[in-house]
Length: 124
Image (tube, rainbow, N blue to C red; front, top):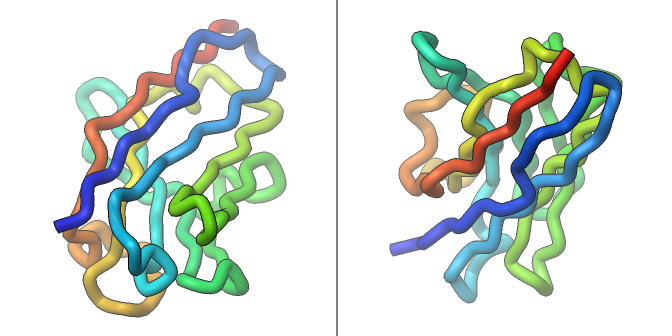
């Protein structure tokens, strides 16, 4: 069982930045590709970014490319999402997740462990 705890959300003005963190309770953190998803009110949970176990492969949804950066520190069992140039449409609850399939994926069904989420609100 892997427990994930997100932090770093908050209220920010458009154009601002936030860095989300997700701490994992496992000694084998580097075995898990990790992802960030977000869910806006009335919408389905959607893929944002993913990173493989070593940190060498990353994927992003098109709407955040060039603005968001996913990274990980395996020594600290933590994955990060640096969010720059934030827009009101980025407002959502952000979830981190650990993949059970051993390969980095953009598909929600590949992820078996989820955090509780952290709210990000971007004001215009």
